Every structure is written in C-alpha cells, then in structure tokens.
Length: 416
Image 1 (cartoon, rainbow, N blue to C red):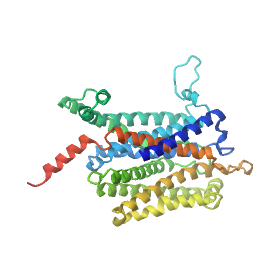
Image 2: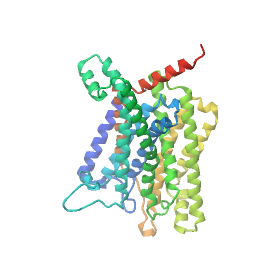
Image 3: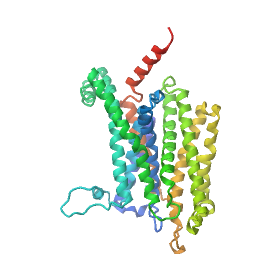
Image 4: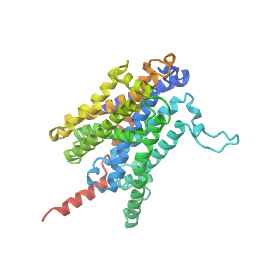
C-alpha cells in the first residue's frame, strides 16, 4: 500500500502537468529553436526500450525452449505493456494538440487528408500500436488458464464473474490446451520480429534525418541492443525487490538473476561497440560537421552527461564479468539502476546534444528542462508504478500453469 500510494501520488502529479500542458501549450517545456525535440522524445525512446525485455523473455525464450523464463516472464510481459503505455503518452503530448491524434491514422475521410507517410511520427504510431497490440494479446493468452484458476478459487461472487468473463470459458480440456499452445506459439512468432522492427523504426526517426550525430546506419542494431539492455535492467530492477518482499527466492532464483546479468553484459558490449563505431565513423568520414558533433559531445557544455553515460553503460557493467558480482543481489540491483540511468542519459545525449549545435552558429542554443518537463517524466514513472502494483495485486505475477508443469517435469527427472 505504501508503494502504491507513492506511485499514485506521482500519477496525480502527471495529471496536473498534462492538464497545465493542455491549457498553456508545449511552451511550458524547455524546448526552443533549434531543440524542438527534447524530454518528450528522450522519454519516449527510453520507455519503448524498457518494454523490449518483456517480449524478448516471453517470445524468443519460449521459442528457444528456455525454461528459466518461467519465473519472470509474466511480470516482464506486464512491464512491457505498462512501459508502452507510458511511451505512447509522449508523442501525443508532443503534438501540442493531442485531441487531433487521429490525424496520424489512415482513417477514411471525405477530404482525402491522409497522414504524411514520410513522417517518423507516423512510423512510430504504426510500430508502437502494432507492438502494443501483439504484446497485449500474448500477455492475455498466457493469462487465460491462470484466470480460470482464480475464477474457480474466488470467494466472492463479483470476483468470480470478472475472472470468469476474462477466462473465456476455459475448462482445461485437451482441445483448450491444444488451441492455447498453438496461439502462444503463433503470437511468439509474431512478437519475435517485432522486438527488432519496433526499435529499428524508432532509430530511423533519427538516422533518416541529416542532423550530424543522427545520420548513421549503425543506429538500428545499436538501438535494438540498447533496448534489450535497458529492458533487462528494468526487469532486474523490478524482480529483485519483488523477490525480497514477497519471499519468492524459491521461484526467482540466483540462476535467473545470473542469466539476466549475462544478457545485460552481452547487450552492453554490443552497445559499447555501437558507441565506438559511431565515433570512428564520424572521424573516419572526414565530414567536418560529424566530427564537430562528437567533439562537442566529448568537451562541449553537456560533456559531463556524455562521460556519465559512458561510466554507467560501459564501465560499471564490466563488473558483471565476475561470477561473485553476478551472485550478489545488492550489486546486481545497483548495476541495474545504474544502467537504467545510463540509457536515459544516452537518449538525452543523442537528442539534445545533436540538436543544440546546428550547422550555423546563429542556430545554436541550449536546452534546460523546466519543472514541467521533470513533472511529466517522473509522473509517467508514477503511471508505470501504479499499473504495476495493481497488476501484482489482482493477477498472478508468476505463471501458475507454467510453474506447475515445470515442477512436475523436475519431479519426473529426479532419480527414484
């Protein structure tokens, strides 16, 4: 209740910030010319990245028959949905007129005013809405047997009715199980390419532009690796307190944390390679604007943020090479928090530092976030926290059915 109360207070702060934004307009943010994109897009990309680990754990590890996903896949999938909900807020609010958001959809209309399909904003709408739909279906299909269990064990009539409606008549027959497994595999097959495609589309928002520091072909794979990196960091950030306070040490074991740490280490090395190649290409190309963009990152007015992200995303995670660190819960929790901060700084560096020094000095400027920027960003954390607490209150945070089958398999494999 304490955690939910804190999250709900932050959510109310978000409502205040959004209400004031709709009354006054985006001028309450720190955006200016040339920095027309700032916190809204930084936070959008950050939240979308966090949502990637849930689909990866659920879909790809399911297809690869990785049994260790069982304890963490349910709340990782829920985390995906809540992170996508938080991310979707920012492009809508960044429009300035969110009530006209339907303009971005190719809806039938007599005036033939279609969206501009060359706009990255439209690409984001299609990518994120597809990702959210498939993730929601995958999460819901996995929940159906558990909802039937809750329906059968509910004590009051209202709960029986609600869980019964969402259980969709599940009775556990052979036909039901066959359709359930078929639907799960089909949705996993659909969700797997989405892990790659969604953040690739988000990266094309930047690389399709001619802005120095953005116009790079390394962005799609580098963004996908960064998304999985930040996503696993957030899964670990959530799973460690849940494991501690709900006494789930027998379900979320050190093996789970160790495997997540190894995935973080691998994707962190890919991200480090992306940083290195991005810098190498800028200097090797001989383009004076690209070269200046990176010199400005290293020694310009935002240099502290750049070197902080190198520390958070590359230097500190190298401790994960040590098995001793990977078996230390406090160390893993600290590193996960550091990586989340570092990935947010990476998005800030890519967006703001690339924009604040345009091609000509007359178009140079500085960006300073206002309190409304911070309130909107921290408020989405409240939205995420509130939804997550409601989820673990009313739905099973670990799959009951998959855990039963895993326990049964383990018992059958034991020598008699």
